[in-house]
Image 1 (cartoon, one colour):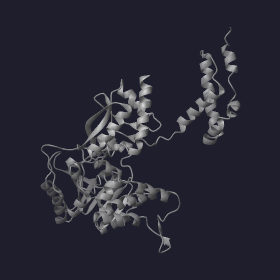
Image 2 (cartoon, helix red, strand yellow; image 1 turned 120 degrees about the vertical axis):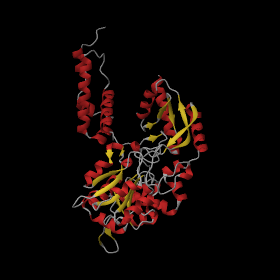
Image 3 (cartoon, one colour; image 1 turned 90 degrees about the horizontal axis):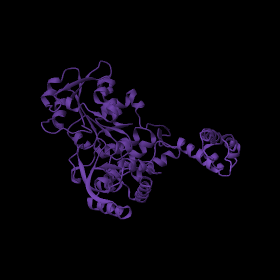
Image 4 (tube, one colour; image 1 turned 180 degrees about the vertical axis):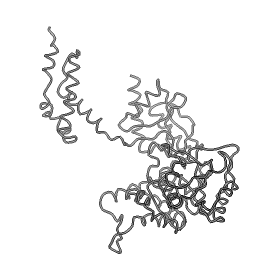
Length: 464
C-alpha cells in the first residue's frame, strides 16, 4: 500500500472556513469571536503544515484541529489573576492576595459594584458629598481615635503623612531608629519612601540598639516628627533595644514635635491568647500618645487592601487637604469591604473570630485541624504529621502556630507541585524534607473536595 506523499497530506488539510462551519465551533465563536478563532485556526494549520512536511503520518480530523485551536485560545485569554487554594499554612500570604474577606465584606462590595452608590453623594442634603465619611465613623468607633482617613495602602498612608507633615515647603526632619529602616516585599524601602516624600531622614542609634537618648540628641528646631516603624517581616533577637511607645511619644511632645507610628500589621485584637507573641495593637499606640498611627487593612485586620490613618483630628484634616490624598484615595469597592470588615470588630471579638477568615484560621484548634488532615489521608493516602503554620504578611515574624498537615511522598515533589498548580483551580502546597505538605488551617472546608480531586489527578499525571 502506498502512503500519501507530504504534498497529498498538505492538500488534505481542511480550509479555515470549513473548520469555522463545524457545529462544535459555535460555542467558541460566541466566547472568543469569529476573527479570534479564525486566527487561531490559521496558526494551528501552519503548525500542522510544518509537521506534515517533517513527516507527520496523518492529517488530524477537523474536530481535532478545531479543539487544538480552541485550547490555544483558552490559554491565551485565561486571566492571570485567578483564585487558588492555599494549602501552605501561611495565613496572610502576600503572594496569594493576603487576607480572604468575610462574607459580609464580599456582599457589601458586590452590592456597591452592581449599580450606582453614594460614594460622593450626600443623601440628606441632595448634593455632592465626600467619600471620606464612609469609613471614618466606624474606624474611630473601633480604634477610639479622634479622626481617621483611609487611602489605598499603608505605603500610601506613610508617604502622605511624611509629605504633609515634613515634606512641604522647607524640608523638615523625620527621626527614625536605624533598626527600623526596613525593606518589605517588592523592594519597598523606608529610606526611599522618606526621601520621596520630601522629608529629611535622620537616623539614630545602631542596627540593634536605639535608646530614647539617641532620639533626644537628634531633635533640632527642624525636627517635624519622631517615627516608629513596625519590623514587618524580620525579627531581631539578642542584644536589642528600642524605646517604649510611651517614651517616644512623651519625648516628642515635650519638644514640640509629633510622634508617628507606622504600625503596618493592623492588629486590633491581642494575638497572645492564640498562642502567639503579642503584636502591638493600634489602640495601644493611640493610648501611648502617638499623634498619628497608620496600618494596613489587608493584614491582621482581615479586610481589603487599604491604608488606614488614625489620630488627632487637626492632623487628619491636614492630610485630607493634601494633594496626594486624592492620588491615594480608596475606591468604592474597597471602601465598602473595609466598612463591612470593621463592623465585625464593632460587634466584638466573638464576631471577628467567627466571620473574618484569617482570625478563624488563627483561632482554629490543632485537634480540629488534625481531624481534617486525617480525613484527607483516608481519601488520598499519605501521613498526617505535626508541623507549623505561620501568620505571614509581615506580621509576627518568626512566630508560628502548631498544626497538622497531610504529607505525601511522591517520586518528584517539584513535578508533583507543578501539576497541582496546573489544576483548574490551582493548588499551592509546600515541600518539606522531600514531601509535599497540605495544611488544612488555610484551606476552606468547602474546598476539600476540589483539593482532593486535584491531588488524585496530579498523582495520575506524574506517576503514569
